[in-house]
Image: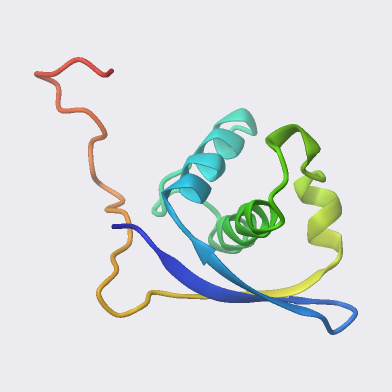
Length: 107
């Protein structure tokens, strides 16, 4: 299971507790690829990845449909800090993992 827990601190002092799951990592990967950024942890800018995961988690927690999300850049301007931690028993994605072994078709 891929899961992180964290807190978003906004510039106005508000905070949100968040949970980052596989869904947020998938959103990050799609956004990063669209912006020409390598989405794997060993290739991605670490702060941008952290903040995007927080962004995606906040949008999901607000129960917003994907097309109703504010832009990442607009949301990021309101945020002071995103703090993420790996909860006990959880794991991070392996940066070197191959999503589909070469001997199997995807899908």
